[in-house]
Length: 402
Image (cartoon, rainbow, N blue to C red; front, side):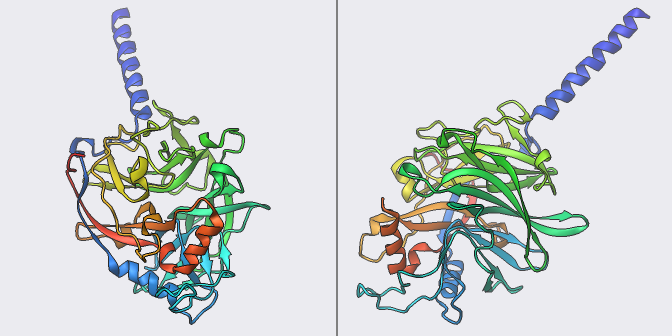
């Protein structure tokens, strides 16, 4: 009798340890069919690139979007598509020639500039209107919000849009474009897309070194009942470290539901899942998709190539290990003869609502590389094509060696 009880105790203890191990592990669903994935071919997507050019150049309204970055999208239940942007120009676009005598549409130096905006398509997919901007108000003097990934969730029996936000504040030195402060989640009503409220998820202001602050929401993937939310630190180097959190699907706005991968389990602490501060890592903004059982991450390349090239990593779990980088590709940049080498590509983002037939639609933002923000902004107004999303279409498969 005593021996039998001892055997049962041993069995139950083993089962308990197995259960703990399963709970602690990252999502492994599909790991058996997971394998290396990367870009096997790509082509420019002029259809979507040209659609934003036409919309931005349209002078029928003077309070709408004419250019922006931080491009994200989410399909709404009624078939419309909501596009979210960070820093945005509004107002009018003037037809060429511009004051420099060059053949580019241009905007005046006093064109309205806001920290975020949203554009909605109609049900046919045509870019239709710009919501009142900024959609997400500044939190305080010198502090603003940038929208990133978004999801449609159900709240209190009704569907709403949850939008992840990055809160940033004015800075100097390496933080001319903002010091990272916090991750928030905004709620938009449907179908009118009215702002219902904003909840802070993770406050990073208590982290004294801004380079170690992590903002979440650059991309999100739904899988196995979870929403995996990816983020990055804001180090001064061009190569950053990636992090991941997870939330039960439908609970992005519930602070208590967030858990972070700490290297061993999901908890309240966080550890990087990718990045060595040298050759391997991500830009502050990147995207992740799930393809044929594999997670594929797209980011600007490490080092000098990061200003012009996009590379990828793959993993069988959101928490890694991440393999790569794969061979990079160079998406086209606007060329106008002024200083084409100073145009830069960044923030590759996947748009599942536009993808299909085995192809993935990826956008990337275009800016002007200049140490002085005022000088860069002048170039963006001189040639409005510099500050609008551009698109490529990708096919994925086993990646070629780097």
